[in-house]
Length: 536
Image (cartoon, rainbow, N blue to C red; front, side, top):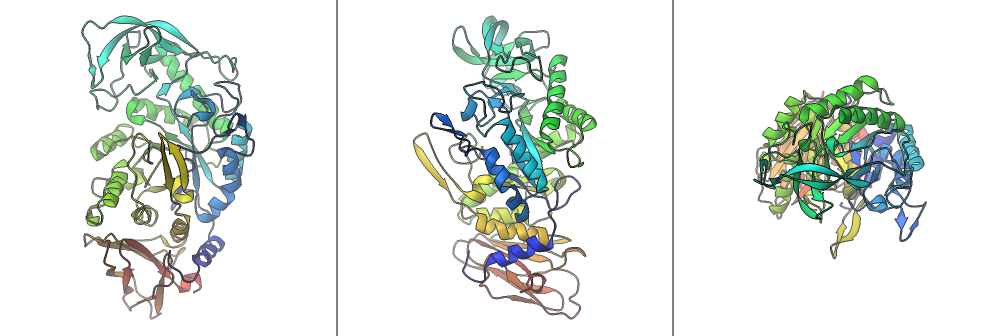
């Protein structure tokens, strides 16, 4: 951020002049925030639970401020008890009914706090007119309460459709979930091996392999991603949606979860590993039975981790468009562009992406908890390119953008003997969020006509006049410039535009055709808005 007139003036103007919008389907210009990262601190401080710590308490404190900044929805992490107790990020699912209420897996609270603190955080978010999306993991369970003798056959790890000859046997499977700490409260359902398609461990022999159950509901489910032949099995005890008792329990739990927490939507984990139509049917059931707190359509976004646009499009088709998907191909292109040192052709940045082909089902993002350094899908976007990437998701018409906690606030953590420090970009993202709320409206005109320098303009609309112009340059050494037009006529009124990211830059005067020459520095992005519209 260059020195100059404080950007805070621009942000304050937007906060005072516009109402906070509520996002997704049917509601324009929403922005969700992923409120956590993989290394979010736990409520457990050493050997004790610290009531001053915890993500739920943080969300309760920060919700009003985030709403004023332009965030309209919060994606919270899995809220139920995981295998690792207060160390579990939430994806090692143990008990979906334990929201930090029962003494299980070594503590009463989850990593993020108690049930009471969770409910208080959601109430605070709703008071700030923020939607809340719960992270839902329906694919697997871990941390069993006991084992069961079960018939299995081993399959090849790289071809799950091929059974290993002569490998039929019986194992002591980690599939008994009785939840003694909860003692039947909320649900008396207990899980057994017939509720799962397979496991990856034999408690008796202590041998790891991919074991497929021989049971009344068959083996691996077919309507899944075809990586490894059949990618139904991911980890732990894999849920079997063929079992009607499993489907009924998931329906009961989903309705309970939504009603208990007054959720406005879901982020669905690992959807490529679950039968596609079963996920769509589950959402249909909840949408028909439960109304969200803010009387808006139940929003859902799935994590289908694939850079293959055809696979994502196929999923959206099969699920009848019942949920959006994270735009993984776009993230991967951001990663490639950042690593290219300015040699990426920016004209192609949306090629092969959901935002470029099906923007109404695209949730766009720059980073998440899986792509951050030291994680399983590590593919961080270079720091220099992140402002450019965020401009591409926040200031264009395509997609529903998702802001990552660690990009906004920064983060420092240590894992596997390595310390990582992620810088915070709040000072850059705040004016972008403000520009989105106030000026990123109306028709969009693209100027994707140079490999290093691209831009676009938005005309504005009657409720949001002024318009904006955005210019990106990925060349590391040379500044960029481009003549761009905002459309329409000036009506004889002189218009000057100011760069809200570099407020000491010279203003741009538009001519009678609403056109001007906009500039930005090397490896940089500039966001230009009507100076008179913000009172400058």
